[in-house]
Structure formats: C-alpha cells, structure tokens
Image (tube, rainbow, N blue to C red; front, side, top):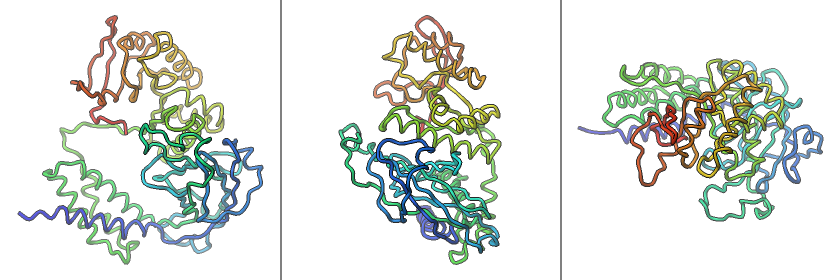
Length: 430
C-alpha cells in the first residue's frame, strides 16, 4: 500500500510557511518611534516617561546585555482600514527575536497613564489597538541575553559587569498591521490540528482522518486569494475539529500556568519584571474570555507585584475574586526541601498561606513543587500540619537511577502523616 504521509505533511508545512503565514497581515503602516535608553538599572514607568526621548527607526541596533530601552510609540490608523470587513488592526513587534520562546528580548506595553497593557515576546508579538483612536503607548524593552545555551559553563553575558556594551539586538519590526481574521483563524485551525495529529500514533484512524481533512483544506485554499478562500478551507476542518475524543478518554481541564523561577539565569530584578509581563498577559486573556483560568504559585511573586506594580496587583486581586487567577501552593516560593531545616520549611507555609489569606481571603490546600530537586521525608508531616492536603511534583521524572513506579499515590512521611500526591505522567512541566 502506498504511504504518502510524509509527502502530504511536507506539503502542509510548505503551505503554512510559504503562503498562509505571510497572508495573515493584509496591510502595514508605519508608526512614529522615539526612545530613551536607561543608563543603568531599570526605572519605574513614572520616571522613564519624564526623560528626553529621541527618534529611533526600525532596523536600529539597540540594547547592551541586561539593559533597558523605553520606546514611545504614536501614530494614526490609516483612514482606509476602517472600512475593510473581516479585518482587525494591531501593532506587530519584533525586537530582533531569535529562535525559541525565551532567553531573549521581551517587552511590556504601558498606556500613557501608567497602566500595563500586555507583554511582547517571540510567540506573543502583537499589541491591541482601538479602531478610531490614536495609537499612543510606551514599550519597556528588556535586552536580556541568552545565557541558557552555555549550559553550566561560564559566560560573560551572565553578569552586566562583564557582558560588554555593544548592542545585541536590532529592532526588526514595530508597525501597524491589518490582520485578516479569516486567514488568522485558518492558521490557528491548522496549528491546532497539526499539533493533535503529531501526538497521535501513526496507525491511528483519527490521525489519518485529520491528515485527509488538512489536505482538503489546502486543496480548497487558493494561495492567490487566501482572504476569499480561507472560510471554505476552515469548513473542511470543522468536522475533525468538533469531533470529541473516544468515550474512554480522560476528561482534562486545561488551566493556564507560567513556571517562573524566582531566581534562575537572570537577575532577581528581571524575575520581578517577568512576573509583571506574564501577569499582564494573563489578565488580558482573562478579560477576553470569562472561562479562562490561570494557576500561579509563590506568594513572593504576588508580593513583588504589590510592591512594584500596585495597579497590576489590584487587577490580579479582582481576577482572584472572580475565580480566574488562582493562587496555588501555599508556600512563599517553590522551595527546595532537602537543604532547609524543618523550621525554614514550616515558615514557607506560614508566610505563604498568610499572604494568600490576608490579601485574597484564599486558603490553599495543595503544595505545588513541580521543579524542586528532591523531597524530604519530613514534608508530609509539615504539609498536613499546615492544613494542606495534596502534593504535586514533576521533578521525580529526572531521576537518573530509580524510575518512580506510580503517578498518583499516598505519600507517607517519617511520622506516618500521609498526603495525596500526583506526579504528572508527561515527564515535563513545559
């Protein structure tokens, strides 16, 4: 039997890369850009916007390692865009991104009155605009270098004092774009089904049905008229998209989460800014979709928002009350449990649970430690004494010798205390 799977998947990949992705934006328009490079450590919004901004152009080199550049972005939507049906204007940003989702430049957009809008990163590089209103916002651009590719070897980029003064990024894009909604939706459908197909066994009938539906969609989509044919292509995918999993499959609740190390491969001040960028994105998603839920551990990260981003913390508090932003874990940080003594671990719970109760009225019942290296046998006793009942980890999958035989089990501690424990079977927290 002839197997043309590889040819079909290759065709799908080429269609997406060569035709579909470039057609997502129908039109482009320039913006007016002025910038102020921060001479030292990051400064608050109120201080930054008082500085003298000078013109900057797309294509300009910017950002010595670990530095910050503020860009003031202004402009007007082209008059003709208001009458184009099936489109949505937005701002597209590329700070000079490389490959991958992280360990590179990121940014946070602010309104002129100091409200965070959302973050900009390689896989989330758009900003919303309001049709009919002037474009006016500030971008706080973080020139974070990639220090993850060196493993545990020394790198001069690991410290601002040794990282040098030459710019490491070039502003590749900062402009208005007119998004074709139907093309963008087709792109999302192909991405979703392609991802599902990649996870299914090669012999799966559902995998074959998805591949055939994707090929029919590509057949229908005219590369010379994607705006006109995208709806018909999406119609070819509607059946496989709506089809439920087998009746025997598990029912899974998808809850957003961002695994933010409080101090790992960047200065602690960058962790604080990373939290602000991440939580701004979360709030934008929560405001757009009432069903969206996001779980976040580490009371310390909430405390940083309360201290450094009070407006953002107020919005987080409101989202907690709505049930969309869910504090989890009950500890001050996602703590190591091997080196600290029992009192230090107990204080993790006292401080963490106390913060969540005082600020949100929330009593957390789970312990959330997906990334800690090993777990003390005294922990079940401390967990139960703190009032928590459940424990989650993932890091046991990194064991070099012993393979954990169970994924959901009762963990009994030294004193006989038992805590219900889950160890996700995916063997990764990403």
